[in-house]
Length: 417
Image (cartoon, rainbow, N blue to C red; front, side, top):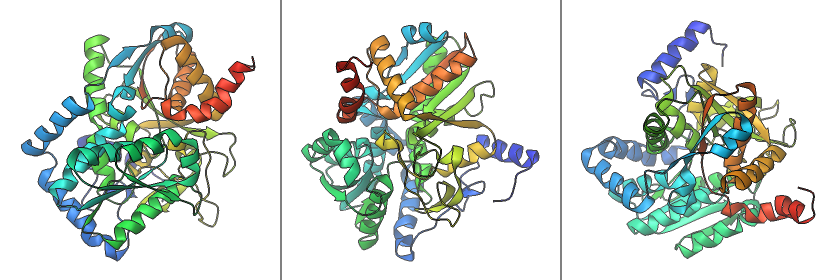
């Protein structure tokens, strides 16, 4: 990718705010596109046609809105985190996706795509999952609409997210362990794609994040912007104004793009994404794709990636399974390139400390993914005393209890925390 001038950045940002992207090629500026096997072209074209035929129509939107209200439990709450605010010297608000059905933002996208799959005549659904929340959401959504569901999950993630594996199976999904590759989210996506290639018309691939070939980044973003639309209206009603800073965690990027997108035109709102800093800055020690990666092609799209000098995708690390991915959605890559969103990192230790602080001061157990956003917000508050912060709490931490038992809770029991 060639270097951008300031004029290039301004033009691309104006186009993004105006809704020009993705363009007819599925591009967000230089990022995105469609890099897929020829056997998947009919399925992708069918999905794109179905999206144009249904998404945004009064009939589909009415059905989706009813499911979001009566089944998902929307709107989710906006919580004034007064005790965290007092500790940080800031006015802190939390957008509570942890209160959505199945425990995270993933259900917004899952039920929307499941309804679309049903309308497209799919016979079965396949999905991938890292932290397990998308797998649980997909299993629940497929049960709701009456479609069989197969979920691919890395063997390593199955070990550290065992509660969610059980939930998926209870909801009727077949959970397939992936023992090849890095045994995390990237490997699970690869296996789901292989399954889809074997039956591209009878199978619907319910992709869980704002990644992959066009039209998935657009579709997932559209289904997740309910978060930002609600949050913006709630902030105006409850706080009397917009936040000074808007902060969310970023892995593939679905919760964050859903929160960020409705605020992009609000120039006074600083927007910050927090990636997984792991335990170091060398390749293999983190999952900070935007902060430390380079552009390339992965799983159907051109975006920022973690790769070696020869272009080989590298294994990643994060204490949070949902952020443990070497790529990121192409729209995030554009937002970084034009300077509208700043991307920073929070380490494993910072995330664990944020879990403890949020639990003890607000009575809320956040997901380890969300804890990265809390850690980044704490840091921002220290540099901007007295300001108003809105944090996307993407999910709840019940799923992380095996990891927390080995770390935070073990330290508490030993008197080290």
